[in-house]
Length: 253
Image (cartoon, rainbow, N blue to C red; front, side, top):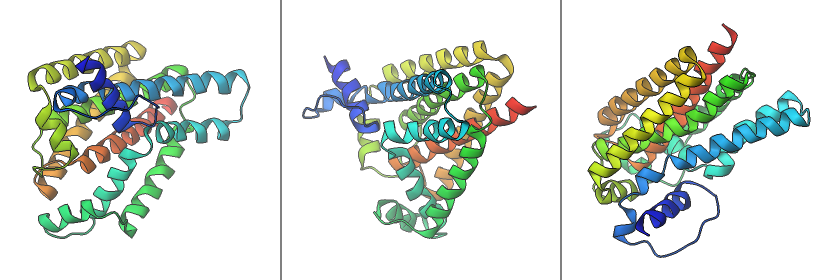
């Protein structure tokens, strides 16, 4: 029962998919990070379903691309993009560590985050227009799973910048050995699927995701002294952008 509740909490927190509501207890939060990547599976599945619908009903390319890019936002509720915005404000403030942590908690957004988000989605849209092969699109769909697996691994392995907040709560309550093992198993399965789709493209996307993870660790430690819930969302967003750009390049070379 705790596993089912943990899965429900994961979808309640990290998606807009309707799930039953109940009071959260400590024992129910121990495995939330294990189920968090499953939101990415749903996003990827809906993306592939949309590709089939768009092809079956001969939707125009602009319609396919715009809705395809909107699907992760619609299903996640933009929670990771919110973290991206807050993180960009903090990183671009060029203040000391304590001030940056304060900025992460500020509900307002600044010019740095808005400019970064516009640039991000212009690049993401441009990349998504090039994903016109089924195997490449399948790798993009798997990329939504990969980004969340790596983000969850970060939550249970990297140092938290604060000893409070939701991310610290989930990291603190996680059954470390079980959750880590489960996440690494999911990473292996995701990698196997990507390499099965395409040895070259799948390998490049995996390397890109891992490289992004280590950049995320380096930047978070340098700027903030560790990760936060906002930087975890920042990572998911950046990792998906890197995946889209790499696949776009691979699809035209």
